[in-house]
Length: 262
Image 1 (cartoon, one colour):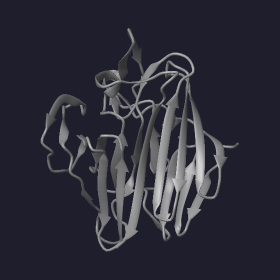
Image 2 (image 1 turned 60 degrees about the vertical axis):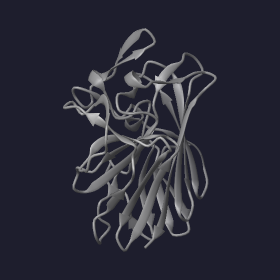
Image 3 (image 1 turned 180 degrees about the horizontal axis):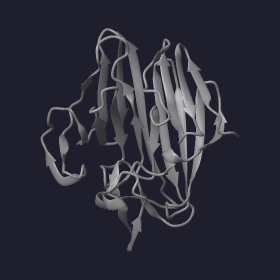
């Protein structure tokens, strides 16, 4: 099937899926109100096969040091899949299944599958990474850009992490865990019971971002948008907390956004 944009609908919810633009969700409208920042780089893109920054773009793959392109010098950031076209495997009124083949500069062949499913009050994103040949470390995550303002008061964030990853001057975790600090943030937090972050646009909408994963990056230093990014490991995790994809064990993750009007 083609990589043309897909529109999913359920009740008064409408999501735009963009296979040709990195497999991202380009828009989510509730009652005609757009929740995601618009633009080619924004919406909500999948982070795969890694999330956040890799220090100096290098990671250990078995006994081999791999070098990724430095697309956020001096580091590599957010994986390779957001810069590639995905393919639509199947679609219906409220669900789309996209696939992406991992190719160079990533050193291992593999397939990424993403399912985007919409209901009247939820959007569920599910992603898996499979390999049919060699095993390799990988991460999965999502990077949504939620509009800070929907025409009323600015959004507020509410979450209760167990810890915050101390951030070094290079924007990477130092390995130390500290008590959560007040924002603004460009930081990774640990939530061992699963990610749960509530965004509230007062008098308008409440949206909960949840995931069984225990890592979330929160970025709210930009004036136009805030980002709440559930992921399977911390930034630089290919080096510090590798999750191995094997022919027998794919890497899978899910996040759900659920909302209600206020």
